Image 1 (cartoon, rainbow, N blue to C red):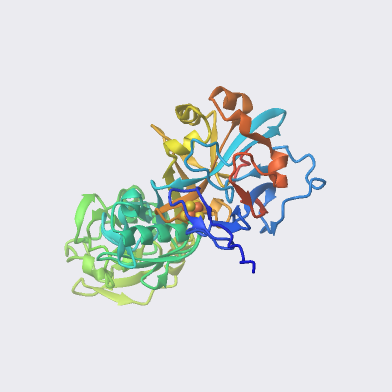
Image 2: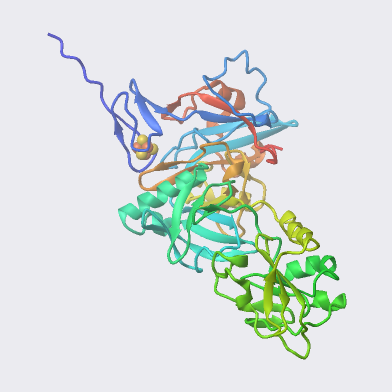
Length: 491
Ligand code: SF4
């Protein structure tokens, strides 16, 4: 009796985990599988078409008749999304593709990089206090990053990085990797900040702070708001205070008020006076008026000077988004008493709100292309680094433009919303997998010691011809249009 022959496992060597994979199963990262003894990269290769994005379907590779003449780099670009990784990278990158642009021969080196040194810089458009600088940011109780320096109208988080991925406990690394992966692939991630807020952040969407969606970012700091709208308030109200956690502005004292002849009111603000009409630290940071912890803005006002103030003096208090606004008049004891907002002042609060931009969450993936990744491009890795630094070689990520940091190495940042959907993967080391493409003139590639023997025409790559250095085959291709606003990677 014949015993069924059990197919042998094959070994994936696309990352240091080196999985043995049985037929019909996938490896630990779900990126590679064993299909009848062939190692298959499961996600389709993403081919960028020179048209605006309208979705994109997964298809088998194109029949040659359909794809004739496609080696013009002006119409198609092979991204690294789904291209696979060659590890360790003394091997050439999975695809080294030639194309022609305006009569110039170009080379694009395409690989999915495995990044241990990587993370995300997250900009959250809100005035609300999310947490003190350096406070830990946690997911499932594990620290995945920290609060970093605030920017104008936005709070900033620095997430991931090698210390959280590999320098802590196994769980910390796994949770950090998973949170980064979801964030970079455009999924919402819930996180908490020690002694601060609970957040749900998603690239390109409004942040949710303590369960409330943030709608607008401030028009400016309190001082700037006073300056911007001073002329519009003149003659409508006796005093305006724009409440802001960073700089609270007071019209009658501010230079903007002085210039247009705003009368003094004898107001006193409880805070640290920086310059006339500009006050720091009027309250504690929080999620109330203008990013302070105030729910009653009168707490920042001291006694009015009886030599200057008068009964009936009118006061508008407003936050930097116009979200909070209240109107007061001084009584006979020169104490502010809240009154209904007069119709004449409503348009000014609405004008502030109108000038606020929608609040968004921005996620920039940041990583350093390691020495071994560079060796997949050239036998002399420093040549690639110098070529990138000299702007001879262009770096893209999934076809999206990147910012390359000055100084040593190839350290880049990319807006994840400008990349094709689901561009990121992971391996359990743990590390993130992200697409990276290096494009340059063929003569420059040759000059920097590129792997010329492994160059294949763009048309072959589009047709699904197997690259000779690839231990794996591809499962298919998806064709996607360019994201609006992205320059064509080969332009
Ligand atoms: S984790 Fe994924 S890439 Fe790494 S060896 Fe296993 S299947 Fe291959």
